[in-house]
Amino acid sequence: MSETGSPNDVSEEHLPSERASAEHGAVAAPAGDPFADPGLPPHQHRVQDIDERAAKRSERTVALLFTLSMLATVAFIAAYVAIPVDKSVYIFPIGHISGLNFALGVTLGVALFCIGAGAVHWARTLMSDVETADDRHPIAATPEVKAKVMADFKQGAAESGFGRRKLIRNTMFGALALVPLSGVVLLRDLGPLPETKLRHTLWRKGKLLVNMNTHEPLRPEDVVVGSLTFASPEGLEEDSHDFQKEIAKAALMIVRIQPDNIKDKRTLDWSHEGIVAYSKICTHVGCPVSLYEQQTHHVLCPCHQSTFDLADGARVIFGPAGHALPQLRIGVNKDGYLEALGDFDEPVGPSFWERG
Ligand code: FES
Image (cartoon, rainbow, N blue to C red; front, side, top):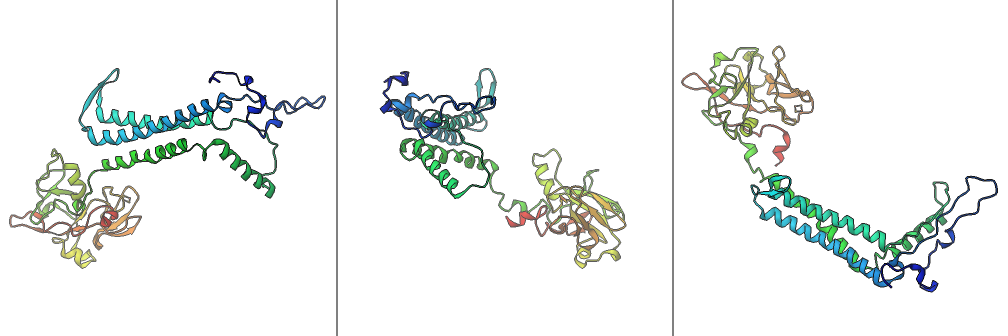
């Protein structure tokens, strides 16, 4: 029989058995009841239900779609590896676009579409389409109902052909297993591992502290008690290509505190006559710390209110920051300018970098 043949041409003994056949058809309404259950319309058999060759054709179609999905995923990975990032292609009517993005979009789209189309075609042509009706009942299921549910589930699984149609099952597993690889490959775009780059900044012994507003090297007399000055390392130009990357690690916050008010010995030893230099990068999630309260020597991060005591090693006295702001050891060179005496002795910024 052809795929377009009428199911009515098939004798009754060739039709599949249906457990719900008794439920089909209208239920006679009690006289005078306008809300009686109208029942389900008579079930129409699909050609695949009665023609094994049509069912095989549908099975091959579904398998083909899943196989195409697998090929598209492989093409996605190949495109990611082979197409240069700066390759441009002309696509009508969009114009010039990134060849890599276009290839990744098309291949991933095909891979996902084919999985979806295969699943829909499988459900529409091969899985059981017998509609059933059931009465509403209390939510808590009785043991008999649970047993019936399990029996229905097993029957549904058997009717779906999941166990019997191994070609579909295997190609579907293959497509579903391969498609997540697309996401794994994209992890490469997170860039190379930072290795030890996050542990070091531009600060070195002898680097001058440059005022970030005036761009002039700082002298001790430029830093007065109560003021807050921001500094960057000498030689770091704002128009250099790696300025943002470097200043995000090296930005300094400088205050002068009366030496008698400094509570921590190391803080005093690493200062120059009460001038202390701390990393400006909050140890919570890296916001620039900037709100200084000169009476208490507390500095506040505006993002989540972590508060650090600059007179006591910048220890955390409030908020979610995990540890103190790193202090930079400073001194004065022979020309009278403030200079670093080395790099920070710990990573700056969020604490999790220390675990890398
Ligand atoms: S980033 Fe500073 S408190 Fe959250």
